[in-house]
Amino acid sequence: MDVFLYADKLQADSPTRLHQKLVQMQIPAETIMRRLKDLQDNQQYHATAIQKVIDEQMETTVGHQMNAGGGGKTVLDSVLSVLTRICPP
Amino acid sequence: MKALDWQNFFAERRASHGKVVFSVAELANAAQMTLHALNTELGRLVQRGLIARYAHGQYGPVQGVGSEDLVSQIDPGAYITGFSALFRHQLVMQAPTEVTCFAARRHNRKTDRLTPAGKLRFVRVPSAIYAKPGQRVLVSGEQALCDFAWLNLRDGIELQSLVTFRNLDSLSRRRLKQILRRYPLKVQDAVERITGVASNAPLSA
Image 1 (spheres, rainbow over the protein chains, first blue to last red):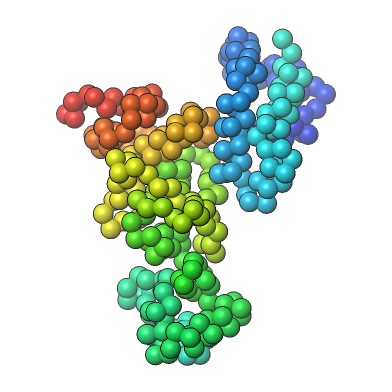
Image 2: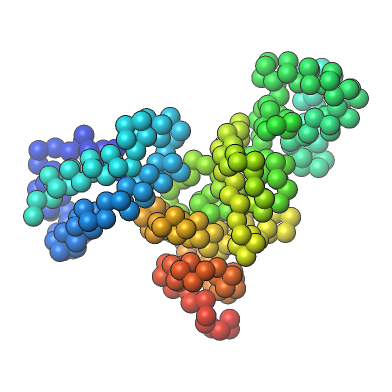
């Protein structure tokens, strides 16, 4: 959800900075790839989970706007697009 | 009664009985008015913003009414649990925008209620899961965790996909083990994974 909400803050050098950050946090590339694959392979599950977060944790007005824009499925598609862009294999 | 009298009435009842939401019959009795005359007066007072209508036939002061006050008034058998209770016990990082209430009866097909005290979501649960904590409206952290797991696993969602837990070491392992036993196996497994407490372990462990 945070990736979706703050995607417009990403800069041209974000992929490099993200890579450095992940190295600092000692998160191996395999873990990232596994999680990305999970997001792609289980889209129905993650879209439902995101929808639940929208329904239960977002302010009513924001939630309505997000649902009008397509809800959890749209958020997931957008996040996957951002992540595949900034986390190149 | 004048607006100031109503405000005094609410303040006095809060101080003496801790009661903040009243039915129309209770208000008519206090004001010594007929129900019809009171309904007319209430309409005026609500319109002027001096009194708030919290549910069908339930009124109270505009400020200082929490979801706990309201839940017990709408359904005396309902209690606050799940995500809302976890947040109040500071066991999750995220804040809910609705109050989850478990009830033993159906709510006239209207599970979500928008009130001046927030959005209340009533969920009718099986008797094995339903466990009102005595006279209290808010369940313990242990029960809230189990109810949260039950509610979301029923929808096929893992708990960690929704919230970030914290302070779970403050939960009583003994109480958690006792409570877990009445939940389905998949709830027991999920809670055990999160807390490391095995429900089939001896209580003295």
